[in-house]
Length: 266
Length: 322
Image 1 (cartoon, rainbow over the protein chains, first blue to last red):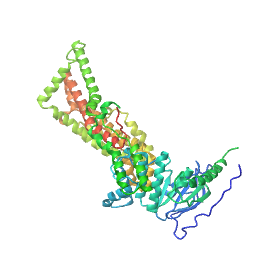
Image 2: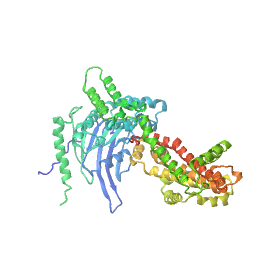
Image 3: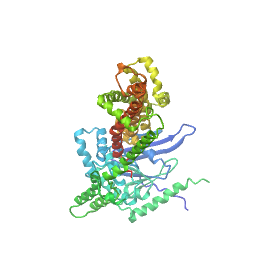
Image 4: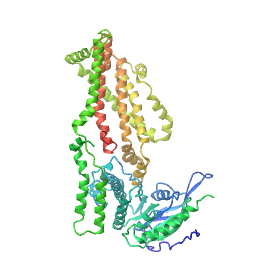
C-alpha cells in the first residue's frame, strides 16, 4: 500500500466575518498524573462557524467524546482554551438520557425551566419543539412508551430547548437501526436548516459524516490529533446511498484506515 | 398470548391508541402534494407505529384468579392444618386453641369496643414515629450518599445499626426516658431511621451517571441537580427504603410496647399482647398477633404497594408480569 498522503484542504475560509460559535485553541487533554500521564487530545485547534455543521470522525481512542465534554463544559482542558461565545452548549448523547420519571413533554419543559423560561410559556414552547421533531401530541407519552427513534427525537427537542447556539451530538444515532437512522438524518438536516444552530457531531460512521456535514474533520487516535479535513459541497438533502456520498466516503475511509494502521505494533 | 387477551381492559385502551395517533398525525401532515419532507414525516410516523409496543392490560377476572386466589388457598390450608392439630389434641386446648376460639376472642374484644381503640393507639404511634423517621432519615441518607467524608464516617455505622434488633434498645430507652411515650418513640426511631437512610443511599448509588451528566448539561447543578435529577432518579430505591422503614418502625413499636407497658401509656397492641400473656389467655395472644399482622399487611397493601407500583409503572420498570 502506498504511503498515506494527508491532503489538507483549505480550512473553512468562509464566514470569516462573524466570530466562530466554538473556538478550540491548541487544546490538549491528559488523563492521569504526571509520570503516568496519558494524553487523549493533543493540540486541537478547531473553529465551528455560526450555523455550520461539522462532523468529527475518528476510530476508537481518538478522544471524540472527551472533546465534546470539554466543549460542553463538563470537563476542563489540560492546556489550551475553549470558547463558546453563546454561553452553554447543548449536548445530546448516544443514549437518549431522557428522564424516565417525566413524560416526553415534561422532559422538554424541565430544560426550559432550567433555562429560565417563565412557567406560562413552557407548555407552548414544549409543544412547538415537539412539533419541530414531528412528535405533535406526544407530550403525555412516557419515555418507555416511545420507540428508539422517537426517544432520540425527544432528546433532540430537549437539547434544542436549551436554546444554545451550539448543539453537540455524541454519536446520537449509533444505537438505532439503519432505516430509523436514515429518517433521523433527514430530520436533523431539516431542523438544522430551520434553526440555524451550529452542530458539532461526533461519529465513527464515515457515510453518516459525509451525509450530514458541511465539513468533516478526521481525528487520529491515541492521542487525538486533527489528521485531515474535508469541505463537502454536495447539496442537501443528500442521500446516504448516493454516488457523491459514496465516493467521498471511500476516500475518507481510506485515510481513516491509514490512521488506524499506524497503530499496528511490530 | 392466549385468547383471553382479546378482551382489553379499559386501562389498556389509551396505550393501544398510540400507533393510531401517530398514523393520524402523518395523514394530517401531508395535505397537499407529496414532497420529500412529507415523505420523511410519513416514513418516520410509520416507523414509530411499527416500533411502538402496544401494552394490553390483563382482564380483572384473570387478575383475581392469578393474584388473589393463591394466597386465599394458602390461608385456608393453614386454617385446616390448625383445626386438624386442634382436633387431634396435640396440645391441651388452653395451649392450642382452635381457630374458632381465636375468632371468638376477637369478636369479644369487638363487643367490648376496645379493639379499634387499641389498634388506633398503636397505629397512630407507628405512623407518627415513622413520619419522624422519614424527616430525620432522609437528610441523613442524602448526606451519607453525597458527601464523601460523611459517608466514610457514618456509612458503616448506619448499615451496622440495621442489624441491631430494636428490642435491644428498649432497656436503654427505659433508663433514659422512663416508662413514657418518649421511650416508645426513641425505639421506633432507632429502628426505622437507619433503614430509611440506607434505602436512600442505595437509591442514590443506583442512579445512572448518564442522568446526572444529562442534568448537568441542562443546567441542573448543585441543589437544583439534587431536586430535579438526583432525588427523582433515586425514588425507587428510596421507596423501598421507606417500605422497609415502616416494617422496622412497626416491629420496634411492638417490642417497645411489649416491654415498656404501663397503664399511663394507654393500651396498644403490644400491651394487650402482654396483658393476655399474664392471664394465660392463649386465644387473646393469638388474636392480638393476628391483629399486628393484619395492620402490617394492611399498611403495605393500602399505601406502599400502590405507591411503588405507580412509580415503577410510570418509568416502564413494571412490565405486566404474567
